Picture (tube, rainbow, N blue to C red):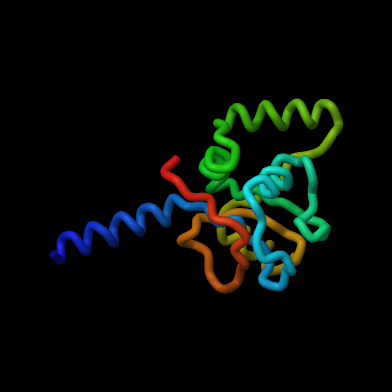
Length: 137
């Protein structure tokens, strides 16, 4: 029985470690966003939250590949090619990059318009979770 409990807890922690939380400032007035809204923000289509407030997206370099695989099911090379086309055409720029989850949390805490992502198991009360991207990708 204890072995089953241990295995269940281990599976849950592994699954949570692979989940990605899209986060913002705790005082941001948006409570949730949809996956489609997240795609629009992070892929440069619209840089606004659902309530019309300006959104400033930031990439988390330590989770970037997992995030884009879960968000749009694209490889790093495909995401890079997408941005190359948009930059070349002068339409928009990609999100600014931050080094890791610690840097992301610091940026989120200092800017109410900031939006980024971190592994779910690194989220704490200093950020507001807007969306969780689940899956084993």
